[in-house]
Length: 496
Image (cartoon, rainbow, N blue to C red; front, side, top):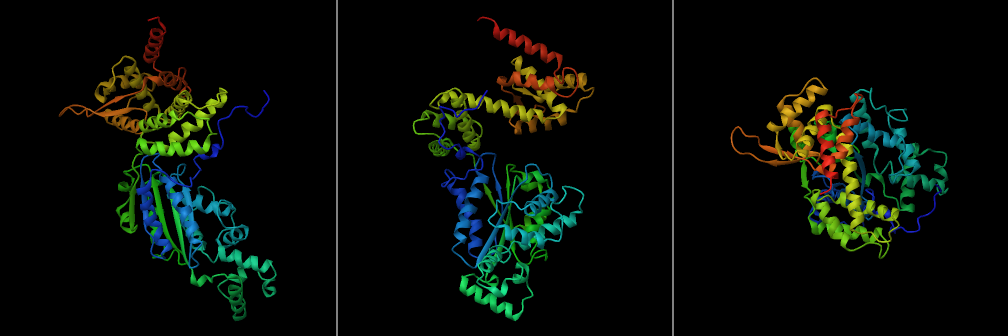
């Protein structure tokens, strides 16, 4: 096969459908954006900043809202010479502790990431200011005190003096406007121990170049920890960042932290001392309703697709699907992208509901596969038990009625089974992951409080995953379930 440019593509600009895209106007989050603005306004006003926790289920616009308002704030700060702010964004999805988060942030500077506004001169200066000669910190092995010491050293270096001012002075020297400074390094020029003659030269430079002296600028550092619940309930960063100035860990900057979490209960699980020290503002992002989803989908479709390349009916159709998925705008946008690809593959010139349906089916199968693959062996066998009862039209089913089947499967394939109470935890976790639906069915004392069900459209995928689990012949597919599935398929294929 040789590659040629597609003759029929519905896309005008598919980058607007990527997770990294930040719209010029954010739709459907007016109230939440106003609350985020209240947090960041303190920086413009040179006041003590709020720390904040942003809550809401996946796809409710938490991350994009924070990035959107930070982007606005950065533009607004250009009008003020007496305030400087650095924003550090760290996604904690693959991080399981504050220790690892601190290492990741320090390494982003040691490695000279170019996604920040500072230029090469600034990066070299910041690296030289840290008390380490390592090109990157190892992900394990360093004492925790050493890691946090480097982390707060970094925060304290992120000042106007060491970034914007540093670059402005260097640029002035490179223009040869100030020959008396040519033989000095940036460290010498902006260092704390300045001679009277050097101070005089710098004062002249400030006046001639329109550069604000560092002494007139208040510095802020805002650390954004996305998916902060992944770092666990130990609170080294959440507790120490807001208190670091009072504790003498930093003295050049005023730090604050913004935590973003899908887990509404996360804040309740961290230590009470964290909550009391945070000067905390909480913001909850509610699910998008259908109208809000339609606004977002319309905005993205108009930008992503060529004129006339999509059926207007897909707006409401996609919004309805996304609403069923918990009001997830990210899911809706991903459907548009995948539907456009489907249309291109089929050489269709217009994206229609058919392409949205194909995209939805593929995305759901991809997600189920990813989530089920990550379950432990007992969870997979519990899922096998639910599939078995679903095939026999015996769902929704209570834990009490489900447990004997799981117990049989686990003892046959793993030679042990977990107690019913542990199974209750598994069921709760799998319902939170979206694998199961859980309904409150409490009918009085002694009765199970919930019933569980599963979408039978995923039978084939579930059977495939179970059959390929671990190295055992037949995987974790119980023979009883295999036979039930084969009978189900045979019945489906018979003429009606």
